[in-house]
Image 1 (tube, rainbow, N blue to C red):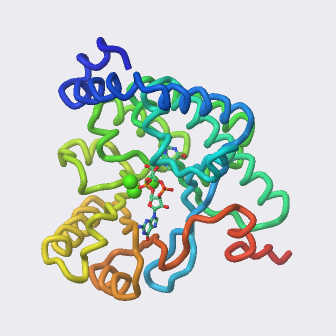
Image 2 (image 1 turned 180 degrees about the vertical axis):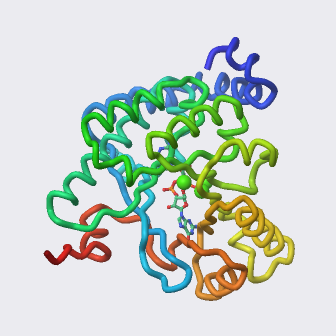
Length: 285
Ligand code: C2E
Ligand code: CA
Ligand code: CA
Ligand code: CA
C-alpha cells in the first residue's frame, strides 16, 4: 500500500500504513513475505473446509474454504499469521487467486467422483475490492468451469466493504449477475451504514463470532445477535452464526430464528479427504 493510496482511502488506512511501515522493516517480516511468495508458486498452501449447517436439523448445506500454509520449517501455519503480511503487498491478490482456483479444482474432483456438490464460500480480502481484478478472476474461472456458477459464494468482511463501500456495491452486484452469492462476514464488528447494506444486495450476514461467544451469559451479546437476526430478516437476507461451540448456543440461536450455523460444535475446518469421508456421501444413480 503506497502512501498515496493510504491517504486516499482515509484515516483507518493511514494507521494501517504506519503500522506496516514499522513492521515492514523487520527481517522476519521480509523473509516471511518472500517465503509466502514461494509458497503460493510451489503449492505449500492447502485448503481446509468447514461445514455450515441448518439450525433446524444440524444437516450440512455448505462449506467455507479456509487457507493454511504447510510451511517446510514451521509446520501448519494459520491465516491469522500470514494474511496481514500478504495484504500489505500485491501478494494477497495472488493468494486469493490461488484459493479460488484451488476451490474450483477440488469441486471438479468431487463432481468427477460422483459426490454431491455443496455451496462453497471463499474469503476475499479487502485489497481485491480496492485494487480490482475480482470480476475478471471469476469470469476467467467460469469460462473454464461453467458448472461452478451455481456453487460459489464470496465472503467479504464488513470492514473490507466499508473501506470502499461504493466499489464493493458495484463489485458484489456485478458478481451477483454472474451467479456468485455474497456474505458480509464478521458482521457487528465494524460500522456498516444500513443504507449501504441494502444497496450491497448481499445474500447473507454472518454474525461475528465475538457475539456468539457470550450469547448464553451476556445480555449485550444476546441482544446484538437478536438484532442482527431481525435486521437480516427485515432485509430478506439469510443469517449464519459463526463460532458455535455448544449445544446451548445452538438452541438459543435457533430460538431467535437464526437458520444457519457454523462452528466447532458441528465440525472444525478439515482437509478435503476428511470432509469427503464425514460429510459427502456418493450420489446413488
Ligand atoms: P473468518 O473468515 O472469520 O473465518 C472463521 C475463523 O474462525 C476460521 O479461522 C475458523 O477456523 C474459526 N472458527 C470456526 N468455528 C469456530 C469455533 O467454533 N470456535 C472458534 N474459536 N473458532 C472457530 P481461520 O481458518 O484461522 O481463519 C482466520 C481468518 O483468516 C478468517 O476469518 C479469514 O478472515 C482469514 N482467511 C482464512 N482463509 C482465507 C483465505 O483463503 N483468503 C483470505 N483472504 N482470508 C482468509
Ligand atoms: Ca469467513
Ligand atoms: Ca467470520
Ligand atoms: Ca474473522
